Length: 423
Ligand code: MG
Image (tube, rainbow, N blue to C red; front, top):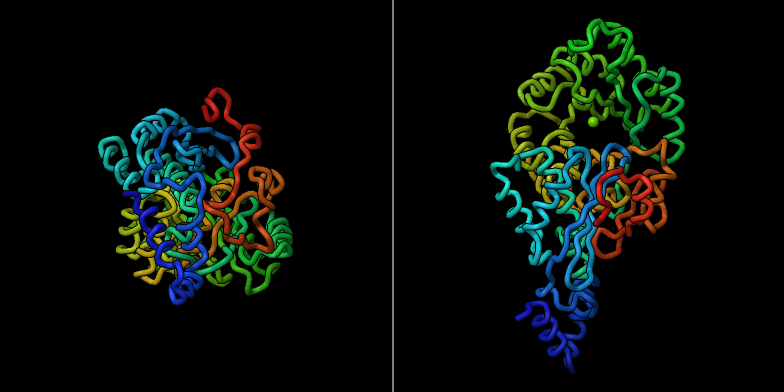
């Protein structure tokens, strides 16, 4: 028997003529009531089946993978994966074939099935997890639409109504004065946190482009940039700096120490992602908070980082680390260590709102990245809804599923040539 129909009939039947039950009914949460009573294409949720999994690729901030999951009841879910998704169309097909005729409401089970089936095919990280992430987003979107519930509700509810965004800004090659000017502009737009890149591969002061050691001139450049920004924005706006994993352990320690007077919210990925013991060494030598996670996958990677005390802040990229529910698991894992989560995010508004549901549904959310300030108008074009960011925040959507409507034609303008577009 369809459990939803069964429960709905039970509740409807029991309310007839029963004042107390009617009162109880009126007091039930709006979302739950709607989820049970509203008829729609989702009225046979237990018979919902996946009939198609399609992909489209866009060149935006790197490569974006969009997933569209179709069902036998006309409900469609959209998801987005980032970064580690280039050249993955064949993998989408392989994973999609596994999902055909499955009920999309079993989100966690379907994800676990695909992960287990890929044990020998790289399911521990990288492209495999990133593609599955895009599918996972689409499954949550679909499940929410089918049940007429917001994704945050499916995750257990929300701790906050709006998500604080930090603005990722200029290239590291800008002068301190230019960085300060940009920081003031961002502050004027309502953002309460800002991030700059400090790594500069082509820095003319470098002695050697393969050696990861930053010399005195490079470190002076980094420090003067952050000093100028801190002076421009005042003491209270949060300031972060990213080194994109390009340096060595000693440089990480030197830069973290040199930045201590500027009260950074964090220093991000001073060294490559793989060696968590080296991260711990940096962290043990500075009071500047150390952030990692953009290049780590699944809760397993974060468990190790937390157990080794390798970071002060975890930064999963929710569009490649395993998805919305995996992000929630990572956040709660970090919460056990009193460590906050500040997700990396370069996705379109669809992915951004999906990430917001996760950020809303965990206690230790700190802030969410946004990386499109130089193309803000373009970013706003990808969904039907009004621009998401207002005064440095995104209000969590109250529409079913992820809660934004992707405009496929807008994505198509930036589609990567030679790859089928949702075919
Ligand atoms: Mg980064």
